[in-house]
Amino acid sequence: MRRWILLGILALAASWEGWKLFRGHRDAVQRQREAVRLTAYHQAVEAFYTQNFALAEKLITDILPDWEKSYPNDHRLADLLSMLGTAYNMDHKEQQAEPILKQALQVYARISPSEPLGTERTEVNLGTIYLNRRDYASAEPYLSDARSLAEGTPAIPMYERGNSLLNLGVLRLMQGRYPEAEKLLNGSVEALTPNSAPWAQTDLANTYYRLGGIYAMKDRYPEATQLYLKALTIQEKLSGTNSSEVARTLQGLGQAYQADGDLATATRFMNRAQEIAQGSAAPGDNSHAGILLALGEAAQTQGNYVKAESLYRKAIDTDEKTVGPEHPDFALALVYLGCLYRDEQQFDITQAGPLLERALAIREKALGADHPTTAGTLSDLALTKFYEHKFKEAEHLAERALPIQEKAYGLESLEVSTTLNRLGLAERDLKNLPQAENSLQRALTIREKDLPPNHPWIAVSLDNLASVYLAQGQLEKAAPLVERAQAIRSRSSAR
Image 1 (cartoon, rainbow, N blue to C red):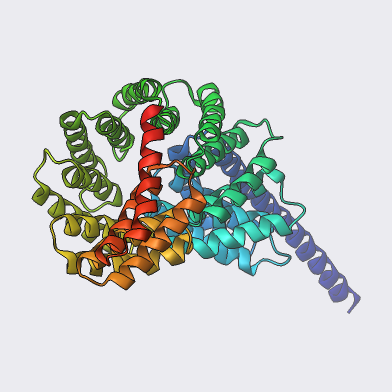
Image 2 (cartoon, rainbow, N blue to C red):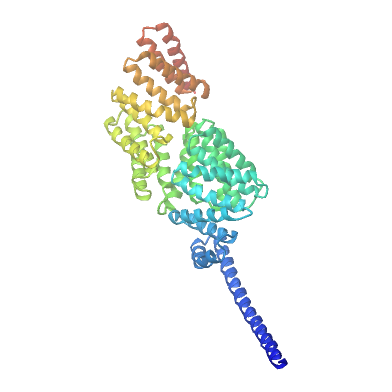
């Protein structure tokens, strides 16, 4: 009996030794697999951070199936997916980036404890995809949540906060919510300025550029040019003197100097921008078209309408080749040419309407019927119909535009004053004089509040309101308005 017991013990001992050997072999294989995973991961990270996105995409997609199986509810899978989606986004592969970034967010949502930094970065990247598509409704929740995470999580670096504020500020800018945009962008400047890392400084330059655009829209041209110059200094240092970012900022500088009356300086900056854009054109890059529009606007301001027409047409051709005939930027080029035909008497005004109607159709389809940019086109088309003596059509278009702009820009914005002015003129010529007086008085009040006292737009509003009083036989109300308008024009011509 003892012999069988001894044999049993020996058999158990042999089995135990075999199990230890098997387990040791299995652990060694597992360690080897883990080492291979980590090596591939570190290679992908290196490719990603050296901006070799094509290589990063290949390396990540090679290991992704194994990671999805091995780490289904782990931050390692979420981080890998986020990096892959970001690489696709940076590589202009937005269609591939979008589902990957959404998958990353789903994994982050399953992780406990949560990973706010990874979630915030992924939401910013996903939000910018929609921002680039001008799908503001889809961008809103991601960029708003990213900003909340960045500001509510002390562990998130200040650079990340600055980046989230920048992107939400750009969204507010594109929505026409300028006071909110200005506040967010100033917060971004505060967060990014102390960080000397190249990526932080790149975002800081972009923030300066966006703020410059806001100040230019408010006619605060000296402040706008200073911000553009700050952006330019950083961009020339980081991306070179001939980069597309530099060209874009030079264009902004040129437009700010042009609006401030310094046409020589404006033309110098915009010519340099054009040279850069022509030399660095790439598929899908329509920066050259934007510069052509700015140069055309400068030529139009100088009274060289034939040159302006030629430049606008070149911009239309460029946009058609780069972004396509259904893109909102293509619509912008149509608007420039349409408004030239509308506003300058040497052209046939009947050419203006079809261009603006085409732009309106593109913007309604791409941006939506209630988008503020669509409303701007409605307002431009309203003035065209007014000049063509189609007063009822003009009134209808202005009435469509007005509530959209009031919601987007505020009841006392300059955009609203422009549409009120156009609505009031149509109402006047339709003999709806009380309504016309109300619209034109409101437009004048806004302009007197928001513009310098000698601004030509105030003179225009004074004359328009005076014309309603004259139509009502109220000379005593009209006369002082006409005198004020004449005084403004006299001071402007004396400068």
